[in-house]
Length: 87
Image 1 (cartoon, one colour):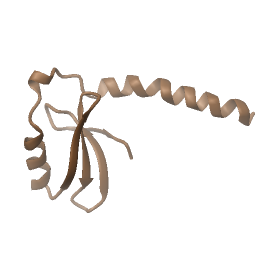
Image 2 (cartoon, rainbow, N blue to C red):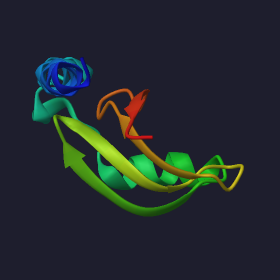
Image 3 (cartoon, helix red, strand yellow):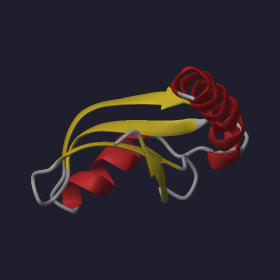
């Protein structure tokens, strides 16, 4: 039973990831707001930003939130709405 369960879990999770990632952020890059605007907005809320990169059409922010908790969160590049995390 264990031998079949692990491969099944791997297939199920890897098959779902690309679909979920592509549904997070799908706006054309011409509509994106700048990384500096996102950093300014989050810093005003008390966040500390270490790095921002683009992944799957989203901005992925690495840093600490207003409570000091380490975060890796995806933001929609148009609305700056949080759309998921790696945590």
